[in-house]
Amino acid sequence: MSQMKRIAVGGIHTECSTYNPVLIRAEDFHVVRGDELTAYDYFSFLPEDDVQILPLLHARAVPGGPVDRPAYEGFKADLLARLKAALPLDGVYLAMHGAMHVDGMWDAEGDWISAVREVIGPDVPISVSYDLHGNVSQRIIDQIDMFAAYRTAPHIDVRETMERAWNMLLRCLRTGERPFVTWAKIPVLMPGERSSTEDAPADALYAALPGHDTRPGIWSADQMVGYVWADEPRGTACAVVTATDRSEAEAVATELAQAYWDVRADFAFGPVTGPLDEMLDIAAKTETAPLILAESGDNPTGGGVGDNGLVLDALIQRDWQDALIAGITDAPAVDAAFAAGEGAELELTVGGALDPKSIRVAAPFKVLTLVEGAGGAFRQAVVRTGGITVVLAARRRPYHNIEDFTLLGLDPKTVSLLVVKSGYLSPELAPIANPNLMALTEGVVNQDIPKLESLNRTPGLYPWDPEARFTPTPLRSARAPG
Ligand SMILES: [Zn+2]
Image 1 (cartoon, rainbow, N blue to C red):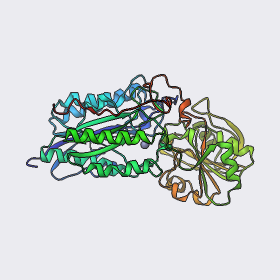
Image 2: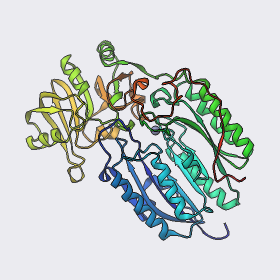
Image 3: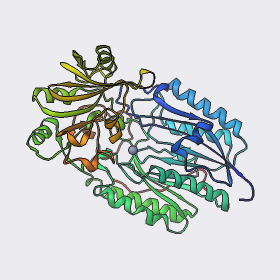
Image 4: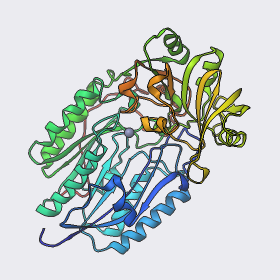
């Protein structure tokens, strides 16, 4: 580039179940501002010697309920103030998830991205990266120029996707080419657990995307599953294509949408899946270990609450020996364990600390291990009742990485039954599962999709409307050339 191009970087990244009653608050976000953003490992691919990075704000939270409105407005105001101070700009890169729901607002990402567009004006290109479980809208498409989404679920291409969005922006600024986005809605919504890219039919759909990228005039061909646990009008699967060739972009969007629609009835759960009792019956007869049982209705990484004592209750009733439950979010129980101290025995009530619908379990526990966290908010307690060890967390969080266990002195490989609040297993747990079962349980990310209350969804969506008909229609961005 002849002169240093000025590129602003920011974004907001979370996933919100509208069925989850627990709002995500400002303090639940990990926020980086200014130089913290460029120093953050998440963005370590950014530095380029021929561009000037103007870091704004990036806020990221474990999925949950809707985002508290004042928290959202606060982050947005901070971002926009930094954006105004960074002008003039040559480009903007926004690292998004796409399934945020702000309390009392439809299409939160549409609001966020439109606010950025308003500040920078019509001439500055915007590139965005998304989770494939994000929801898209015409309002979003009308503000952006480039779009890249994860192509794996479980997500093992986060960095690659961010780089794809970033590199498209660099290409645009270096060559002067001006890409635009074309999309096609697909009236299908399903949980990530039925659309893992490790299982058919999603594996083949996603494996085909790089081939589309290389077609003439195509920069990126992306397939969105969408987010099913938000009862909002924009929710739908879709194909999103970044291109400089209009007819090729429309052809790719149409083909992707048709291919996804054609296999809508074939999406199925990967592991053996069924009601909790049925899964525990199988677990009782299984001799290989560790058997990893995913409690899918309360999965915090899907937007679940994470406080349900349901499986603990079932295991106590069966007098289960050698099980580890990781974990249950319950700040009062954690505080009680800390007050009692390591080695103490006490009566605890576990579960239902956040959602009154979650199962509460009262039992005698022994406190095994206490781990302090920053400011008390991240405290954890490992407790045991009978043959069942339970990790209690003061704050909503998953236990999906091996390190989450080793930090507590636990080894997930040596227990016979490991229960995690999860849908499909994480990239670190999946390889050690021997075998993996998934329990279909109650909760705000319940897998029984046709039964989800749907007051605001667009009619004609599969599976709510099994007779729905569909002809793909490519839709243009308002920013595409005439
Ligand atoms: Zn996702």
